[in-house]
Image (cartoon, rainbow, N blue to C red; front, side, top):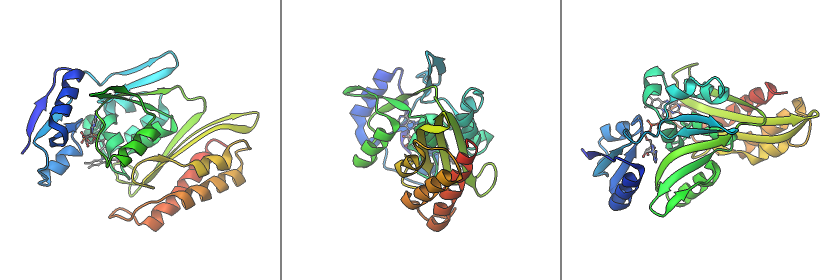
Length: 273
Ligand SMILES: Cc1cc2nc3c(=O)[nH]c(=O)nc-3n(C[C@H](O)[C@H](O)[C@H](O)COP(=O)(O)OP(=O)(O)OC[C@H]3O[C@@H](n4cnc5c(N)ncnc54)[C@H](O)[C@@H]3O)c2cc1C
């Protein structure tokens, strides 16, 4: 079993990551890390816990939100002013898991997990990463591109996630095998602003439809600039189903996931029409 270590500050944690490289694994709430360790994986010499770093705050100031990386799903589901993110937090496993599961860990979860990440993409969230070369602040979309390109090597310690108050309405919907406490088939998040009957901003994100949660440009283009009517919604749903790249696993087939992307995106957009 790896040695469990803690650090007293973000600077010290970054130093430990630099010192131990790939032999150290960062642990947030541990709901994924512990499963992997219990399965017998022994690639790591050290597991670094983040308790003690006080990274679990949730703040709202000057038109934006800042979630500490170790804020839990339980904390997030208690935020009435973040209804879509709170709805997603309620869908992360069951209540016991939500007490441990962190928003930081959710960003690194393998699709189809990532119920919080998909909403954060629709909110155009920015990450704060503490690295040996200083702080980085990529958008979540840029982060995923770089992370894939780097073979999923974590770039450093995720300390916080920030996003502006959404200009539009945000809706999250999840298709699971059961209504609650169920692994995702897929989930969708939409953030749509409308003015004078026309869509002025559209951010559409999908989870379970690729290697991690991701925006769907084809679906966004299908509704931007026009009226959010049945025809536009049908075009967006068809575009998302065509563009996505889901996998088959024990929860659902690629075929079913692709169809549910279309169905759930249509339902989510219909709430805003
Ligand atoms: C039974 C069960 C059901 C689940 N159901 C769902 C579900 O319905 N929806 C869903 O989205 N997820 C689900 N999950 C997955 C998981 O619980 C959540 O995604 C959770 O948010 C992960 O957070 P964590 O803090 O526990 O991650 P951890 O296990 O602590 O870490 C996960 C990964 O993130 C990295 N990491 C964590 N924090 C940081 C940080 N601050 N900086 C850098 N790297 C970091 C770790 O190194 C690790 O690679 C489920 C898991 C289980 C076991």
